[in-house]
Image 1: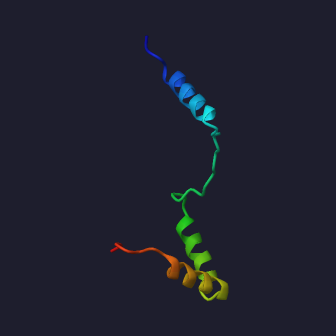
Image 2 (image 1 turned 90 degrees about the horizontal axis):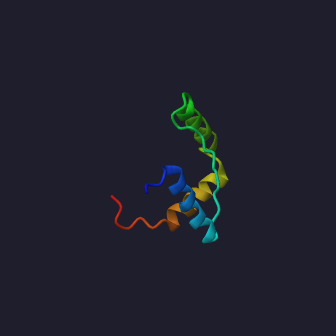
Image 3 (image 1 turned 180 degrees about the vertical axis):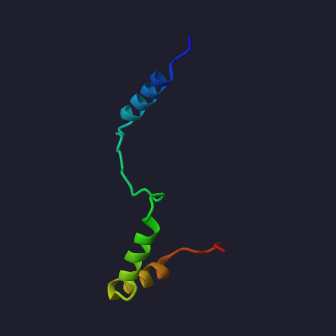
Amino acid sequence: MRTTTSARVQKYRAGLRASGLRPVQIWVPDTRRPGFAEECRRQSRLLRDDPHELETSAWLSAIADTDGWE
């Protein structure tokens, strides 16, 4: 007897719930949307000379594990 796709998904999700997990839906910006790249550039320019941003960038650079990166 073959199971339907929805039955298999339901069984899989039931197993995850039994393992103590729960589903979470996350909405993120659509990077394909017109104007997205320009808005990223705009926000980046706003932070260009911000002292807190410079401090954070320096800290991230100092702790980053980049061994083996090209």
